[in-house]
Amino acid sequence: MADLTDPFGRRIEYLRVSVTDRCDLRCTYCMPKGFDGFEEPEDWLTFEELERVVAAFTRVGVRRVRLTGGEPLVRKDLPELVARLGALPGIEDLSLSTNAVRLARMAEPLKRAGIHRVNVSLDSLDPGRFAGVTGGGRLEKVLAGLEAARRVGLEPVKLNMVVMRGVNEDEVPAMVEFCLEHGYTLRLIETMPVGATGQAATSHYVDLQEVRARLAERYELVPAVMSGGGPARYVQVAGTDLKIGFITPLSQHFCETCNRVRLSVDGGLFLCLGQNDAIELRPLLRAGASDGDLDEALRGAIALKPERHEFREHPCQVVRFMSATGG
Image 1 (cartoon, rainbow, N blue to C red):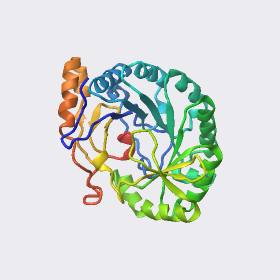
Image 2 (cartoon, helix red, strand yellow):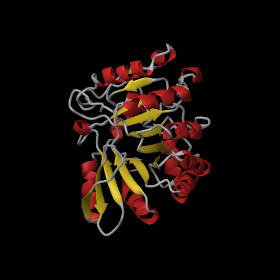
Image 3 (cartoon, rainbow, N blue to C red):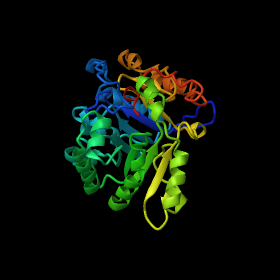
Image 4 (spheres, rainbow, N blue to C red):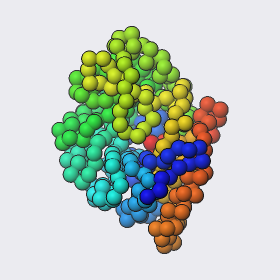
C-alpha cells in the first residue's frame, strides 16, 4: 500500500469529509446571516459515493477520517455512514466535529457505529453570549451533548473555541477552568479570513500568542503532544491532565506539516483551506469510474497541493465560507 505524498514531501494521511453544508446554528464567523444557498440534496455525495471516496483514500495511505459539516448530525442516518466507513480496512481514527446540539441523543448510536472521539465547537459558557454568537443556539443542549459524549466513551472530548476580540476573549480562563473540571481538552483557534464571514471576523482577530502569554501568567504550562492528526500545538497545565491546543493559521501557520485534505458534500476535493479551487470528484463517480480511476485522480489531485496558504498576503482570496468547506 503506497503512501500519498505531495510535491513538498508531506504525507497526506488525514481526510476531512463534509456530509452536509447545512447547520442548525448560524455562527457569525462561519455562515453569512440569512444565507440559504445550500447545495441541493441530489448534489450531495450519497453514502455509497462517500464510502467509495474514503475507501480510495485508504488505499493510498490515509489513516484518519473526520466527519464534518456544516453540522454532520443534521445528515439523516449518519450512524449508517459511520458503520460503512468504520468497516473499511486501514482506518485507525474515525472522529466527528459537531456543535453538539443533537449529540445528547446521537452519542450512543454514533459510538456504537464506530466513532472514536468528538470535537465540539463551544465559543462561550454564557447562555446569552452563546445565543448571540450562534444565532440563537441554546447552550444547555450543547452541555447535555458534551456529557453524553463523555458518558458513552467518545474520548477525548475536545472543545474548539474560536477566540474573538470584543466577543469572548475574556472567557478563555473560564473555559480553561471548565475543561479542568470536566476532563475535556481545550483547543483555542484564531479567526480566519475565509469567505465574507471570515473577512468580517478579522476585525475580531486575536493573536493566540498573546492569549498563551496571559495563560502562562496564571498557570504553569509545559510542552505536550496529543494524537489527532490536526494542526494544534499543545501545552499541558502542570499537575493536571488538561491539555490546551493552539490553532494559529495566521500568527504561526502550520503549512509545513499539513497532512490533510477536505472533501465537500458535493464531491469537491479541497487541497488547502486557503484555496478556492477544488478537484471535482462527483462527475467522475457518476460517470462510472473504476477504483483505479479514483486512485489515479487522488494522486493527480495531491500533486497540485500548494505549499502554503496566503491568508496574510491575500486575506480576501477565499470567497467560499467555512461551513461550505468542512471546517
